[in-house]
Length: 153
Image 1 (cartoon, rainbow, N blue to C red):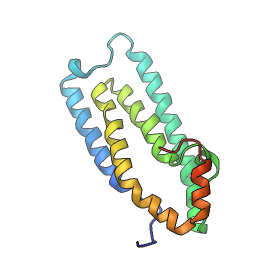
Image 2: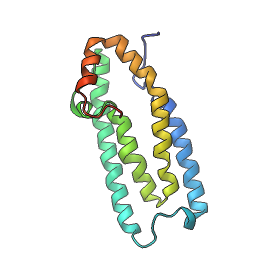
Image 3: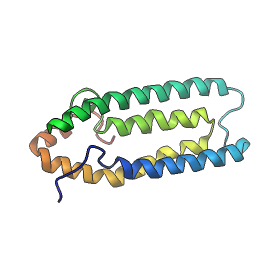
């Protein structure tokens, strides 16, 4: 296997189709508003919750990106901070916080299905990243896999 990988890893293969799907579901949701609406009565709560989720996700991504950039440039395996909790904390931020937050802001259960598509794409395309990390870091990566708390994200 080619042991070179840029810092983006599998992200473009996951993010681009996810973003396209999210836009399509937003357009459908806005055009067929009553059918895909989560709630009419408590929309204010969804707005607040959506904003909180998106902000949490953005903070997670920013924190991890800064640390990952530093470790990647030094050729080190990132295993501190949120990487102790999640195997892929930036992907987890999108799955658990950002995408659901956007769906709540739009008040659309159809947009929430983007989480499922994103997870499927993650499981398909992340394998290349895992193989790269295994080849580059060997036993250190194997040990990390045993210690990380949430392995599937």
